[in-house]
Image (cartoon, rainbow, N blue to C red; front, side, top):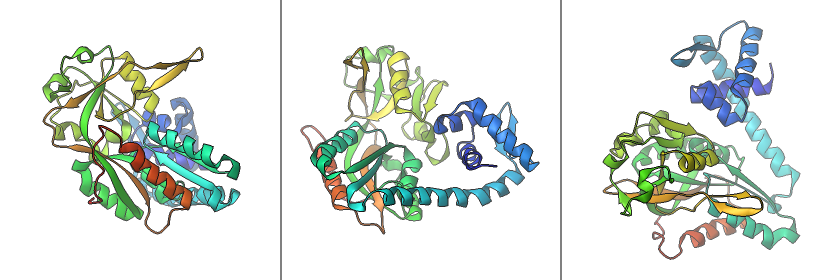
Length: 322
């Protein structure tokens, strides 16, 4: 038994899928399946039952999971402690974001400003509850997340249980993003209605595919195609939009992704259209632990979030009423 096997079991239990767990762990399905099978052989008990309908944890597996989850949480705390101890606390900045390019730009600006002071910036990417857990477990000083205001009560319970405070920055209209293989790419209006999306699959982050957020289609009155694409990778979402007729739930304030080829910067073709008559808003904000004050450089970074998002044609800065 090794620590990787424990992490694998926890991730499979969280996602309910070998495929999703392997994607989140950045390993192949075969490596993950073999590792868990070896662990089950060592224990002499099955942790998961595999069938054509998916994967289900066994009664033995639930007990095993209850013992190993605190171990994994303590290891995350230890990792955060060791990271902070390697460099003086006033020279480190760790941020996790849900794939926002503006966070990368801000980190680059801070690096250039403090390069002679030896500032160590650690930028990470994660989504939903995973990003919140990283801040809660002190693996990141600050998190930048996109939330849906229709789930405000769910988020508040998460913040309270994780000892986090959320500071909203901007409220955005819900929109969809499509690529050139979707006929809506040539749509002659700047908005779409839910019924116009019924023939196309949705691509979404896998944390939106299960749990309390999986009813987003119903809340938005979307009747999508039975096909859907879920992933934990921002790059995979952009590529799915570029090369299929899928659409991605987004906001009407986004940055066009790009890639580099032959030394030249090329933008992936996409178009963002507002979802008409939608009563739900997307809120971008930042999180921190309630019991941990921000270092001066982290406070400076947070101030830059507001400056960056308060540009011409962007929504007004929100009051902290969440």
